[in-house]
Image (cartoon, rainbow over all chains, first blue to last red; front, side):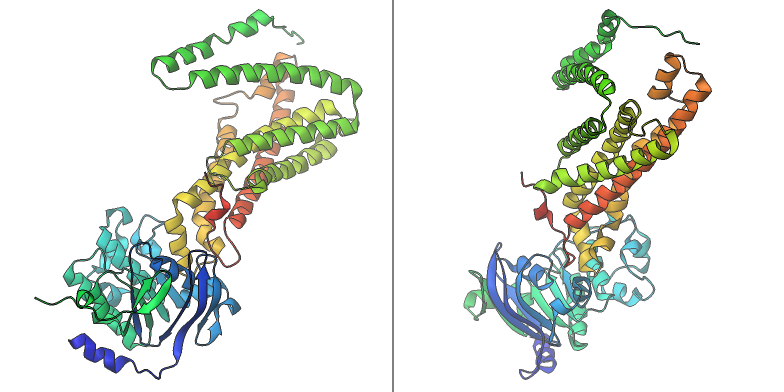
Length: 224
Length: 266
């Protein structure tokens, strides 16, 4: 697989952690530990309700939680939470919209043409009405809106759940570009193949703990 | 021009005919309003009878402490109305405290300034002036504050995805809540803005009509009405802003999170 080769080039075991999570816990899970290096993608699977989304929310500090989370060695508690979230960007499964037009949801629409193109979105989509958008368009615009802010870490919750294979491929290409630029990604996916394509490490969230996913015949998914 | 016409209790009872018609319509179309309308009318009449008696007594005694006590009781009662009119409300003492506090603070401030610097009765707290004035201010502020509060809490709950999307994009809690704070402020200001816009053209205000009916020259009544409307507008605005900002503060935390767990869990 082409993805595997670029994966090996991207990461080496000796890289220091960009994002480091120590004993992160909420009333619903934990304590969990995880570290993500620059340019590394950690793919997490788990049953519905296992707490994957809540885990990402806790990293982004969106819900009350305990534990130590650092970016480049800097504890998130030493900076305002809004600043933290700009660097450690959460992309939820359902994107939120608050204004009528697409463009109003971007801080700046000047330099997003490349992003839109990479996501197979027309450049004039910024003038469209949000209520006219399809689920897939919303999902991709959510990605574009987040990437435009150039975060250091991406916490992606099912980023391609509503997308067809062609567009999923575009999104994955964009994710690989981000990884190549040194962005770290924590990816939640239900799709084991996507986990294998993108994940430098694959983990399972089970019974409130993160475990390394083994290549069982089931998870390996034989190609026809 | 002192031609005051006294009403008989029969005249008053006759006025309920139209409410009864409303009740019948509600029953016919199963609108579920008849019972509410009936009880609220009864309650209104009983409250006013009692307050008439009470005012008589208070005016006769003319004590500053009693006046202050009655004003406080009015405020606490209006606060309960605000609390009851919210669909989603803040849990615990905050659900009652924010609305009541904002309304009382702005109402008292405006009433005290108006009494001591504009109307200037002797003494300035004279219950004959202080209580009706405070009552008018309170009634309108209550409407504004309850609308604004209902709006901000309902919106925080319903627009959670949008608010959190703004937080995820690196906004502070105040930035993230701003569009919804604006909408709540607008909702809170709307009744008083509408009332002011319609004043004198669509509606002759109650107090002015009352003064004219009891023999005061219209241009004198108009001066009073303008003063009162400006006071009401000012107090409503302060109350609405105070209550909305305090609720926004309570619905978020210092790590810029949306805290819907601060709402009453039904």
